[in-house]
Length: 129
Picture 1 (cartoon, rainbow, N blue to C red):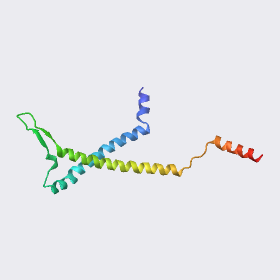
Picture 2: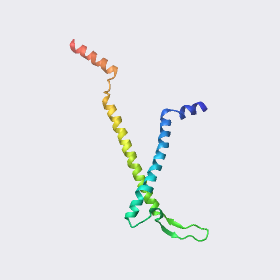
Picture 3: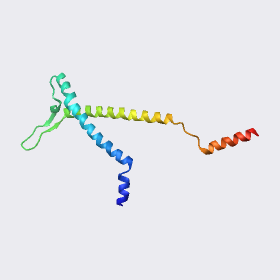
Picture 4: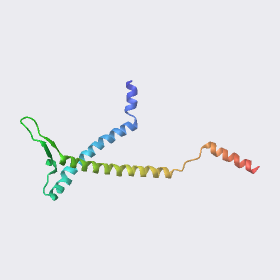
């Protein structure tokens, strides 16, 4: 069973997929930081010095040791922009890969099967007779 697991776990596709997940997670962190620290502050400055991290609607204020109940609109807007940028980048990367694979397919003309070639040769011989 351990041998089968090793064969499964170390197949090329599975390792490539794991690397993709790790890089995707790291890339998502970078995009999140870009949006939170670079994009949102100027937008907040343009919109009357609004700090989106603290933009929220309080439904019930904190009482004693109970925390407040609030809808964090600013964090949602920040996450929505992060998701949109990440989705755009992934779309562009996937589109480039698809285009590259299509070009490779176009470059290689498909060879006809051997049976088809033999049948065509036989038909040519029969036509000559």
